[in-house]
Amino acid sequence: MLRWVLEDSGEFPDLPRLDQLTPEQVVELGGGVDAATYLVRCPGRDVVVKLKSNGLEAEARALRAWKPYTTRVPEVLKAGTVPSVGKRPMKYLVLAALKNDEGRIVETADEYLERSPAGARELGRAVGAELHRMHQAVDETGFGNFADSPGSERTYSSWSGYLADFFVLHAGLVRQLGIGEDRMQATLAFIRACPFVAEGRFLHGDVSIRNVGVFHDQPFTVGLFDPNPLSGDPSWDIAPMMNNVAYNELRQRREGEPSKVLLRDRELLDGFWEAYPDGVAEESLVTAQLVQAVLQAEHRRDRQRRSQADTVDVEVTDEFIRAAVQRASA
Image (cartoon, rainbow, N blue to C red; front, top):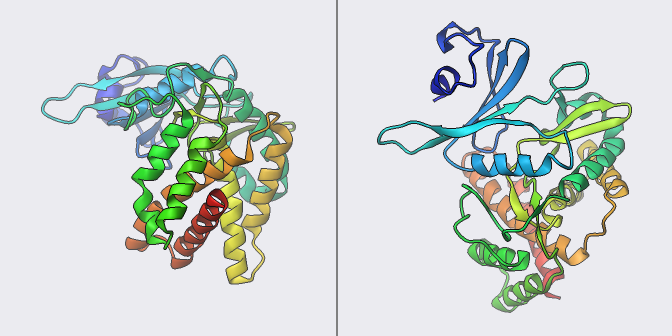
């Protein structure tokens, strides 16, 4: 698949054949949303190539929608489908690598905070300002998944309708936590009655310090990349930062030890709110936090089955879900 993109797509006339490239010219990257991702170093330019069976058309559409509001998202150079016979179609996306003014590929916020943890609050402010710019991009076609994302066959007229259906789809896990039908129905009613934006905004869908690039730190300038985009309410992009703090607070109470990660995440979140100018309704944040916690619980259970997550990770998420349902159904 990568060979076809590099040799036959027409996007890389400045490169020799794949088997003539050095390991430094094609570097496999980790951390993508289920996509095979490569950094390709060409003469005078660096690009990122992503390969995936779905979701890349949605990513390209979101990146183009954000461009009028910020230059600090990857530029889409080409998108298409790798020719195949009798196989599941594979999509490809070619992006310009994010670089700072010195021409160097930006480091991630995760990497930056590893060496400069004291910069968390300022970094949070930069993320708040940048994400607010991205949230100005409106999707007039409706709410939910779009383009070639899984579930895009149904568009919703309201964000609350999308989240209510989402909650019902994953309700089995919530019931396993001992939450009765009365509370389940009260939570659904809470979700449906929540205040949300009237028009869907292009959401990043995977806001984390792994997907934030630091262009400068004096002053802080950041850009977001590697989205898992959907159309909805800005609260969806804010909930992961809030949940990180909540999970780490619950873990610290259990373990009784000070947590540097909790301190970092609190500083990030405090800085974010200082720079995100629009008020976001508390009810919409509670809903987004709950639905994302249910997804996180499923993910952590799967990781636990493969011995990749510990029991405390699962128990902390379960405890958070019970408390969120309590708030929503009170």
